[in-house]
Image (tube, rainbow, N blue to C red):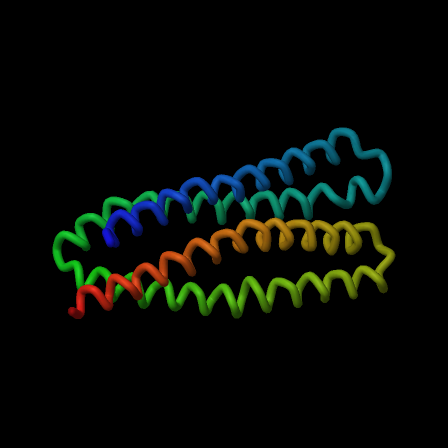
Length: 170
């Protein structure tokens, strides 16, 4: 098993996935601009700021992940060539920590926040609150969709690292 190739393939898959954050960030920002230019009702005007903020957050997440993973590709090769066993050990620790974060944040906290927003939505009638809760739910659903696939990729990569560690210990 060539764990360096697996690591680079994982990082390249992440480079393909993270632009979806950017895409949805742009979609939210275009929606904000549309609400600003075309919105005539109070609720339409209330969406301007929440969709702008959600779009900016998704753009920041996407750009941050993109440049981080792009830098990893060259770092992987130099770290692996320096000390393959240390590389596998460090990557294994990083992926295990990331998998724990996914369980705690993406698959526990995010659904709870979505539920809280939906619950609040039942009791508020102010347009800004309704727009904020609906936009928050939409943004968090986008995060769940994208991070669900990222979780599957890093879980698979983690299993490959575990196998590589066993092979290196022989």
